[in-house]
Length: 268
Ligand SMILES: [Ca+2]
Ligand SMILES: [Ca+2]
Image (cartoon, rainbow, N blue to C red; front, side, top):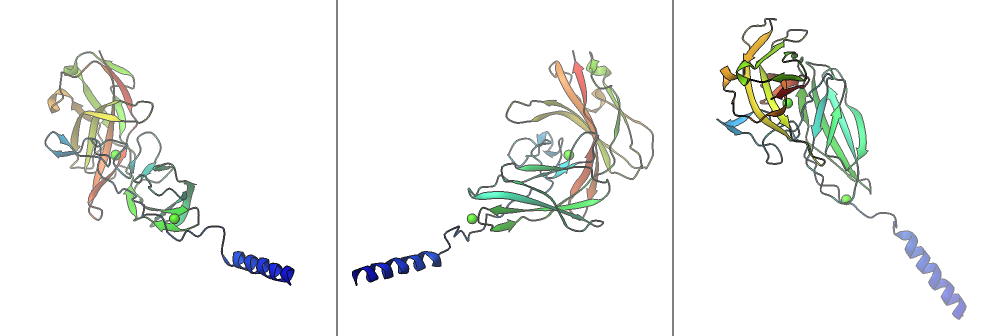
């Protein structure tokens, strides 16, 4: 009798265990991810002389301004989201759609990184993105949707890449309009330094000038550094310059644009 009772007891315990899902009881979805819209561009000022703040509170640059064009020869858009806070995150799905392309999962990655570069896109197509974060139990949460549209890139002419300037009074930036000649609002010539360390990248804006475009003409553009407020008292050293093309987008209340390649410029 004792043996039968013991057996019954064991059977009841076994049934009890089988009734609970022992794998993962987590029913709490991740905190809503914050995919940053386009905050602004390097050279944007809040007021005269006071730079706009990026998402991390530093002066706005190419690494803290939300979704944006990427400088260089490629047609790339970089997404950026607020660092994900949950400690049970598994992976992030990244989705894209446009007027021409239906919604698709373009990338799936582990949750560690806070940015993603979408490559080989087409200028003048407005792309929309959102992300979905998953925890280890399979719960997921969607972000809001952010948008960006690339424009044709300006073609840098001079100073040539790696060129040297000895007297800033002689510094003249020259560039040409890219291919299709579609209307843009302005070209922004930017002179800056790369203060990258091992841990993070940071561009320091030195000077920029906005050349507004009123006619759809194809001549080269020329801007003298000194004629447009460039400071002669900047330290010797290595600088970078490039030209961004920008166009205001009414629906998104922000500028969309393109970033040319970067040219190195030595001042000694
Ligand atoms: Ca969870
Ligand atoms: Ca930009």
